[in-house]
Image 1 (cartoon, rainbow, N blue to C red):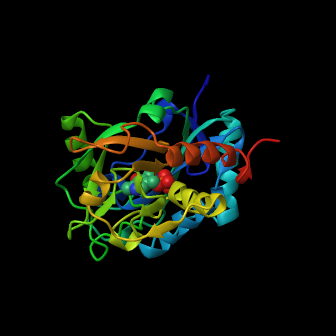
Image 2: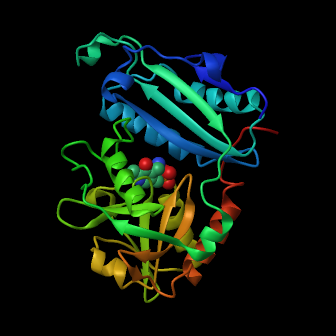
Image 3: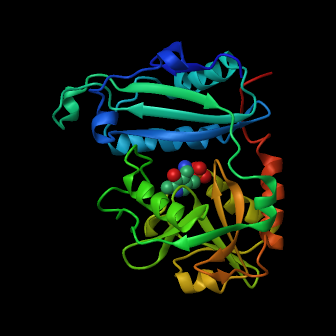
Length: 293
Ligand code: PMP
């Protein structure tokens, strides 16, 4: 990518000039929402689902997005075209905007929209075959009656505490439990396990984001005839699973080979995980909105 252009509230500025106010409540309080989206071969994967989640999060926190749904989609497309970005990652942020030092969001008259597009590759290809090592960590997932994990808010401190622990443990992704000890999700990925041919993922009420990749995998399981259950499970079920994998926009579908020192299944990506990754990579260029002709 030559010059990187950032969409900043309706204008394109260079990365160096992409600045926001220190009074922005996104900065002061994590007051805002975001999406991480992928473009594959000119196709914005499941764009509608991402924008639905964004607008639902906005409604939940009473944040007025200054763009209509169609205008937001146009802004994404325009930013991608401006950057000539056909394969990459899109970060869409809507903060409450600049206000004063007080908490009160009514003092923030105008929400602030930022779109950043970048190239992305988080794991080398062999990691998808070999699988990641993972650990369970002590920070519990936000309770749905505190900050509902369905809201993709800018308040990621919970997840950052998890990332600190997974870094200390030297693993790529961690497993977060909810306050009752049920498996919730990773720091920025949903989790699935496979046992005796059945695919399991925690229901979102356990304390998981309604991941777009998670949704795609649920759809693929139906298409491929893998029985799938959204039901609560514990670390015991993960340790004794035949396969386990994380899903997320950045990670796609990545196998887990070890959790808390226990080898999962054969200790590398299992057949169902491998098939789901293959099929997932087929739909990413097809399902969504084309940004380039
Ligand atoms: N859980 C959390 C906490 C996340 O941040 C993400 C990444 N957005 C996910 C799950 C995976 O969601 P998606 O498939 O929409 O990227």
